[in-house]
Each structure stands twice: as C-alpha cells, then as structure tokens.
Image (tube, rainbow, N blue to C red; front, top):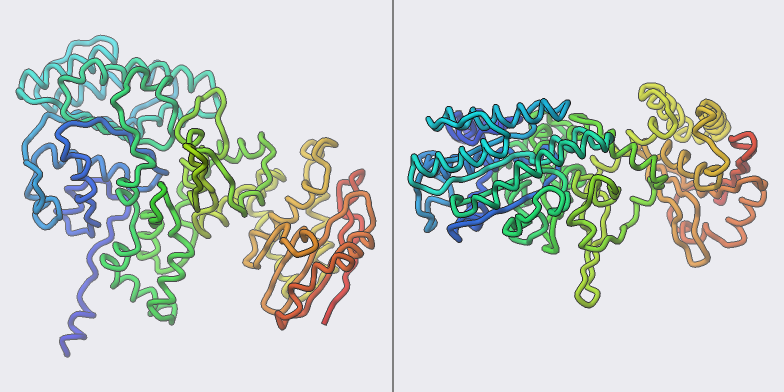
Length: 535
C-alpha cells in the first residue's frame, strides 16, 4: 500500500455536530475551528461586559463554553490553539454560567423558580451557600459569596438571554411578564460591576437596553462590530483549511471538482455578514451536516420552523418577493426594538433570514442593504410561506408544486394553468378579502408556487421600457408573464409586445414564450391566459 493510499484510508477527524461543550470537542478529538484569536480581543482589556446577537444554531453556546474553560484556567485544553501563544495571563476566576434556554418558562412563576434553581446550581458547584430569596437577590448574593471565597472578581456568562421572551413572542402579555422578571434579574450586573471581571451575554434578538438592561450602560453590543464578524460561523479560509478532506469526499460523491464543490457549498450555506466589514461566514450547523450527509439540503431550517416570523410576515402583509431585492434599513433600527412593536425586517436579520449585502453612509448615518444570505434560507423560507399564506398542508403544496414543475418542463401550459386554477380555488375564502384582491396578491401566490421549484425565477424584471411581472427560465424555454386583474389576457399580452419586454432575451438561444394572464377578482381565480411564442 502506498503512503498516499494509507493517508486516504485514515479516518476523518470527527465532526462536532450538536456538541456545545468545548472540553468535549477537544478531549474527544472533534474538529475545533480555532476562534481564540478573536476571543482574546475580548479578554485583553482586563475587564468588559459584552452582548452578542447571532441566529440560532450559530455556535453561541460553544463560544460560551470556550469562555468558561478559559476563565476556569483549563489551559491544557488550549495547548494547540492560538491563544496559548498570546500575551493572555491565565488565571482561574469564579464563573456563573446560566443557559436561559434550559430554564422552564411556560409561566412567569416557572421562570422565577427556574432562575432560583440556576443560581442554586451555580452555588452548589462553587461550594458556597445562597439563602432563598427573589431571583435577583440570590444572583447578587451568589456574586458576593464567590468574590469572598475566591478573592477574585467573578465572571458571568449568560447564554440565550432572551429565550424566555422569544418563546412567547406571539403572546405579548406573557413576553412582557418574562421581560420584567429578566429586567430585575439582569440589573444586578450593573450594581455588582465592581465585583465582576467579565460579563458575556448571547441571544438572538436585540431588545432595547431600556427594557431589558436598564441602566447597564457599560454593556457593549458587539453584534455588528467589525472585530466580531468572524467570531462565530466559518470563514472561507477556515472552511477550506479545517474541512478540506470532507470537501474532497463530497466532490468525489458528486463527481465534481473541489472548486465546483466549494462553489456549491458557498451558494447553499455562505453569505452571512454581520458588519460593515466585507467578510461573509458560513452557517456552521448546516455546513457540518452537509459534511456528514454529503448532500445539499435545507438542514438549518429543518431544526425549527420560524412560526412567529411567518405570522409577522402575514400580519404585515409583506410581499415575499420584496426580499428578492436589497432592502434598505437604517442602522439604529437594526440595533434594538421593543416587544410591543416588533419590526419584521430587524427580526429577520437577527434570526438569520436576512443579512447585510451592502451599506451606504449618509452624513453621520449608516443605511444597510439587507437580502437573503444564501439559497438554503431563501428556498426554505418560501417553502414555509406558501402553506402559511394559503393554509394548505405542506405535503399537499409539495405535491401540487411537483405537478406544476413537470407541466412546465413539458411546456404543457394547459395542464399548468389547470393545476394553478385548482390551487387558487382551494384557498380558503376568508384568506381572500376585497382589500388584498389586487394584482400583487395573485402575483405573490403565483410567484411562491414557482419559486419553490428549481426553476430560475425573477419578479418585476427591469427592462428599458418597464418591468415584467415575472420571468421563469428552464433549460429550454423562457416564459415572460404579465398579470392583469379584471382585464383581459389579451391586454396583458399586448403590454408585453408593445413595451417589447422580450427584446433583452432574444439572444439567449432559448424558446421565448409570452404569457398574458387575467385574474378575476370576483371569482378569486384565473379567468384566462394567452400564449404567444417568439422563435
């Protein structure tokens, strides 16, 4: 056996899928993408209080666990990592670690009891005693007892600080009760500042400091700081350096080159940008599952349906195809919000469904452009929107979409429109009101049905003489759709021809089909369609 064959036969280093314990990853031989250089930047000042917002499944808990190992002076675990070559002074500090996602929170009484138990667990582990009292008083006593016993300032690590609120985001009364409890609990961090060496909180949302961290003016929000851009998620270099063997395995299975495989991975799972710094990172959860399964699928979205976001999109009557183009958002609106007035776009940004694609400076203000980070997020969100907006079972929608896609591939528009009319007819009456019965409504459902297929879809495509309502492209054909409500299909087709929307596609070596579609607002369905081809 050659040396090359021997290397190829060696088992790959294990993937840390779902493992949130830093010590487990190091001691049990899993891949650890070294983030300690970025962590050192947080520690080198000697004292600090930080807040970091990132989407779920992005490695926040592992980061908290890594900080815990550093402050508990487990230097042996870091022997091969960057931080051991830095000027960091290793010392042991008493650590208070609380995972808010693990605390019961179905009622405010449960949350209060859960916080008390979390304090008692920390006290038991440290060997100190804390008397029964309110959660905030017990928190304060724990800090003071730790400082007294160890003669060192304490470290506070709180993971998923907002989980008691996020879990009840659709129930303002319950969310506000939990917010008030957390407000009283977290305010201890300010009053005990002299006893604290380091404070670090993670979460998904950026609720306003005034409502959660009132008076905690030393808490630095690093969520959109350039220095923390690569703190979580995998950069392109990290992906290629740590996972090159897995990339080769996927390329081998897909019968493609490594460069083609990298392009496909980037399309699916890259694209997250959290600051003005032009650095994009990969979703770590989806990337790890990809390397395990060796198949391109929607992994991250399958771990939890964003029901509250879907409901918010419905409530705000936001058109899903608006997300196809960059959406402008002032910086201050991305940095904080209140439970009583939840803004859709900042929540989509914090939750990972939109990300920064660009930004502009206007005087002293910054305006960000937001868009989908990647194909996984884009296709998955649309897959969830369609059943929600039409109140159809997911399996029913999937079956219908497959049938429509097959009819398009056969260029059988008669069958396609028969299926489409059947789908519109099945939408519950109460969802279709006179208020929303306009061209946008029909176009949205039409768009969503086609978008969940693998075809290339563009809406309101710009030409020199106007905008085409929808463009669908297959390997052989290009379809230009124009929609009209309570007007004829002939009028829609006439508009395509008179404005010469088709001219920009004439050199594409594909059959060009112009499709005029008329919707009947009274019948809430397609009235007629006309097709004309241009060879």
